[in-house]
Image (tube, rainbow, N blue to C red; front, side, top):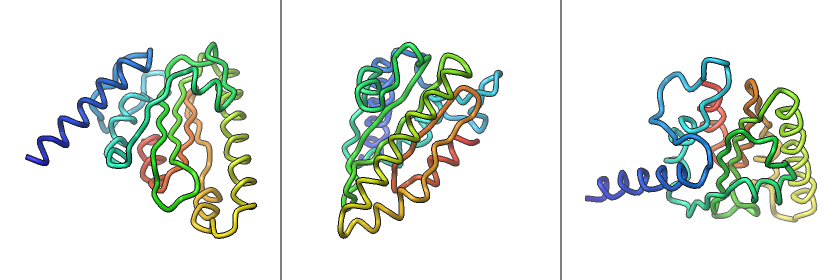
Length: 167
């Protein structure tokens, strides 16, 4: 019964994400999560990584949130997935941001904005006493770019998420 409920919950989250993303609906994950143009299939990656944070009260966000928090103009975004969630003992919430930019120049701007966010987080964390696990996490995270797709995973599951994005 619990497994059935968990599967229904994941499917419900996927449908909610599809309705809110403004882009194409997520598809079931495949081993090849790359489109014909070399960009990442954000929907497939989202479906692959959702089980990593589904038990931590995820909150999905739209392009307005991305513009307000990360300073990335909506006209640079072709498709996106943005989720924040509780990470327990960490000072910051988990932040998952994947953006397919409209073109190469837009992708460079998106990457710059996400790197600024990571740098700002590192600066804030350096001022907190007792945030050693956060500092360790922030110092190993990188903003990842493949084609016009850029990802930022501030997550205790960073390695698995980065691997899914880079498949």
